[in-house]
Length: 172
Image (tube, rainbow, N blue to C red):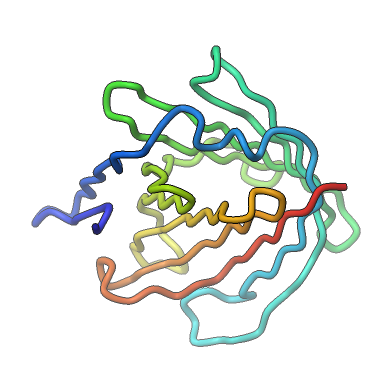
């Protein structure tokens, strides 16, 4: 099942899976070490990657209908901190994921989606390198002790995807 569609006016329509629930991110509660691999220049035809380590701590909020995590790393010797807020809407069974960091200092527009079993897909729009793109966050929790997050951009309304970020999680 395709989790999203694009209307004629370019708006995304996201559909929740039948298995979506407020417990979808419970596996992420606690402390994590993360090995990240990111494409240096997304959507530029470049295949040069950067790798770096980070830590994260996630805790539930709002009586289990949301969670928040803090992501810590360094870039060029300077501290970097990111904040993720995830909120579950029990009526639509959709999650919205928001991100803010110590560089941009604002919440992004949010990515919306759900888990279908052990795989979660979340979609939103951003401008990347001057291009209007659909952003896809993908969570793979088939191994909840070593989950994987990945991100892709599509500049052609979802026909093709450029995968540009991978995070491999492990417990400290």
